[in-house]
Length: 247
Image (tube, rainbow, N blue to C red):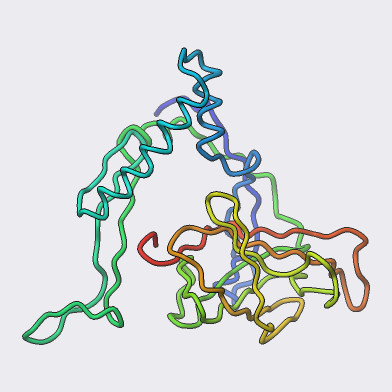
């Protein structure tokens, strides 16, 4: 067994998928900080000693991403030092014509860790910090259109958000609400009236998002009852949400 060189710190929180089990927990990794983007990786490569200019490194990373997307569109599989991405079409095929039906089939990709990443993960240990305070948290997001809780969501349809102290309040608070943030940091707010807005459950209409990967944030000043916080509290769902072929 490889010696552990890195440790992920995790909090345990109640598993909302097993509501009848009172002592069932899931691990929530306490991330080091913000999600890293190409800009951060380019700086890290530069700090590691690369003689290339930062702008050149960033351009290479961005071009590589764009070309990977294009090659996947053309039907290629992509293998990097981090992951293996392969095209996939979901859905059952019934009938003699075997035509693609967007109502029954979905174009997506499978992504699995590369051999290098799997080997690197052998060097990672886990440090349990304890049971997370049952304060404000987004615990589970369910796509109403499909019933799935795997992070896939359907634009222009509802999602059920479950958790603790997630009610959007006060109603006239500036900057409050539900936001979907894409990988470039662009925010899209929920503008449709909330179907339900309670401390433990919020039902919201997903905006007409482009295909991609999103982070869900709730910004609220709700505390309990009619008591509001002086400062806005931002809650971030730990599972990325995906739309379309990036699912």
